[in-house]
Length: 333
Image (cartoon, rainbow, N blue to C red):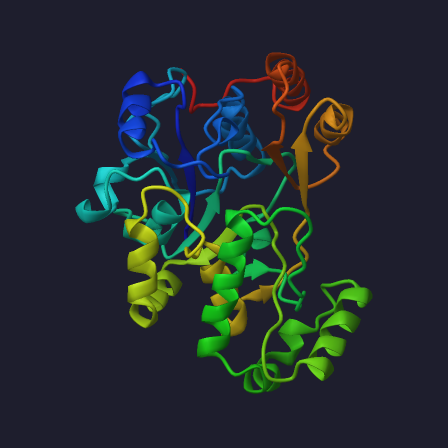
């Protein structure tokens, strides 16, 4: 079965996009509307280079955009499908500046394969990966052990979404029943023994409900049919999330789909090798070394800086990626 990639991208410097966004956002002041959420690090060419070099087996890349297209992009590449929000998101939800709203409707992308991997534009493949790293015998590969949700510091929009996601999961699945059916998936030799021990302990302490699943904050493997199923079961909630112009505290996000797959056993146990890094002056060397040394399969480079030296940080990251991905891909002009 073919596997597609889906990536969301926005050009935060586009004046037309900025103008439309301003019409809807004068009173929005939270982490869904901060400048670094839309800032462009100039790293997108390396995303395409990483895919072509390290995952050449991909069937098609669906590049989802408000309407702007990067100047470097070769739109004639047969593996590339440029997708405007208007092409798949129902008109009543548009325009939207919420990644949650876009995520809830990904399955509507025309021509999207049943198996697909969803990327944010800060998630990069940095060493060779096989298709079986994402799908095994038609099932999405993911970490399925139980992990309680624990938050520290200010509670942001994504934490609210995670809580809402688990509310959905526990409303539709009986933990005892699912543990009986899929024990070998929740407790697997693919995971560390410490992780399996934690899942066993949580089964004894909380036998009736799932306390949480891991936030991988990396590329997620999905079945298109999962999105359709969740829409059938939770249409009001997904409609509300899709209706929001910006991310809101009563939203769910893409993890509700990922965790649904875990809860119903529609996954293959896999220990995802993804490094998550927030980039600032203190972490820059660590992030760059991880890229240059290809220490993980994938890396998520979060924009975690409010510093004035953003340009310096961006140039250092480009230099690190250039070390392992110096040749242009066929997705570039």
